[in-house]
Length: 426
Ligand code: GDP
Ligand code: IMO
Ligand code: MG
Image (cartoon, rainbow, N blue to C red; front, side, top):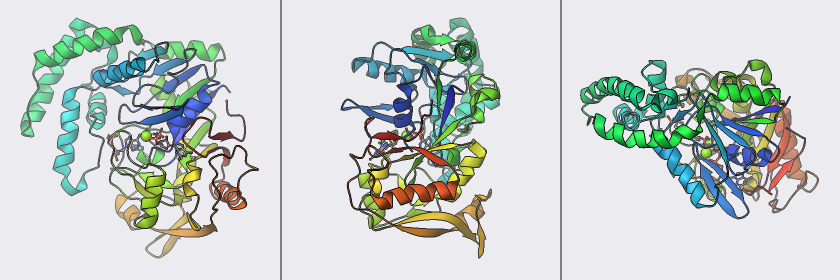
């Protein structure tokens, strides 16, 4: 198989961007198939740091075809700004293809996202306020605007007129400012003209690449615990970041997906609200937050921090089809005397090893931990498994034992060079 799906196995920000960039050195195609600019994927090489939002992480290599597939929701203004930002930093030779079936995020989606959050008060999700939920809701409600329509001036005019009428009614009902058709149309038509050269049927392109035996990386956004179906609903995003979602979100047959690499922090973080059983607070949490620079790429919010949760990882293995694991930010654990790993929960006095569907129950579970002695040695210069301190090796082996997944890669720093591949993945 020449395809590999990269999936966040926790609550996002596990290092998917770093791994995609690293593996892209061998890839012909990199595909983003879901989410939008709620994602923030950090990449560091040659002393240069990039934070990508909706552009695939293969953009730095001129030989790679970068696809933004049909399952994405794309904010044209932000996407073009991101592209211009890359160009200003010298990334000018790239191949980018945008699906004509992807959906467009417009300013009314962003306004509604913010408004729903406000109305939910203490039940707010803590979204990125990028309009992701409202854009996917419009898609499901069949009042979304697709790229194919967006780039045809007369068609865009028609569909925007019709949609804006409905959206302005909704905004008015909520007591919010409405949007003026002419100003959106004028501003966004200019973006559409610029975007048009990248637009094609990316499903056809992918079929060609599959037939040529090209190496294809699918770069997931978010993480399994933020999945609309299998995450901690309603504290989730509005798309599915699992291996199973890739075929529908990119227009390929499921038989082309076999290998799914779960990206996993050596501990756990979460941005936004919702249950988080292994969450910790206080000195250790602050230490990990500072050492791991755990502040959101998109919203700059401090990330919530906790111990590694193998119940979550087993859930992710099952629902996302993960058969390889990449252990990230391993260096951040250096210096912690006793490291805990959660391997089960207690719910109302009973031991369970699954993620309960109900938020009410999941908020009540208590993590059951094993404790592992830590290590003091700096591991950021380690380049092989053998060089790791004994207790770090044991930590890896324990995770493999508790998750039933082989760790195929580990990472000891944000730089591309600080990646140790333990088996070929693509
Ligand atoms: P993504 O959304 O999954 O791509 O992850 P983010 O880029 O949002 O967050 C991961 C953060 O960890 C970024 O700041 C990366 O530069 C950083 N990072 C990735 N791998 C490592 C690592 O092994 N060690 C350290 N210290 N930082 C890392
Ligand atoms: P990457 O790809 C971490 C979270 C938000 C919020 C919830 C819903 O960088 O891992 P949304 O704006 O999607 O409606 O927000 O999902 N969230 C992420 N958290 N990493 C992400 O992406 C995320 N994308 C969305 O914080 O809790
Ligand atoms: Mg991120």
